[in-house]
Image 1 (cartoon, one colour):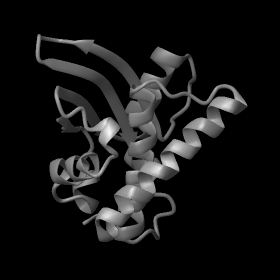
Image 2 (spheres, rainbow, N blue to C red):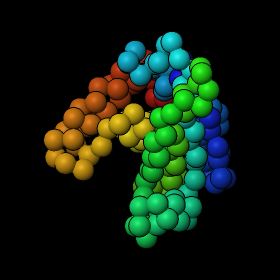
Image 3 (cartoon, rainbow, N blue to C red):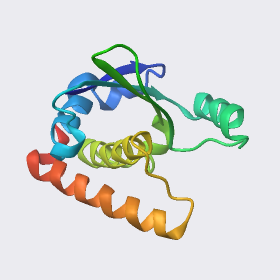
Image 4 (cartoon, rainbow, N blue to C red):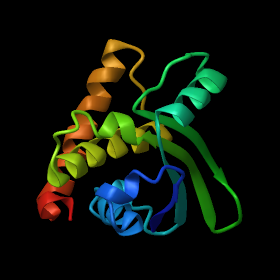
Length: 155
């Protein structure tokens, strides 16, 4: 069983996402079986932040002095006999909410896509090489289409 702990450090998120825990955990429950970890308890943390905070983290950990849409920090270690901690995902509201004309469904759709991208980084995918990019992109689309099929408009 996989579960996300959601932390929010930017009040803007509450304008677009009323129940953050339900949103992300509903997406996770729609993932293919290979990412369900049915026989284990698997946890990840999602920090819903903004450009200012994500820029600081990007500079500190990636030596890039600019904001980005998402950062993923894989951990992937057992924290007890029965619990595996995958790692942390940080998402910038400012990036997800562009353009500001996005309606709530477009916002949630964009957020779901970027969350899937961040999750795949936690489980070992990357996109440094072109071949890795193609493999990761294919997996993202597969998961996204499955998630999209399971529920309308990510509500």
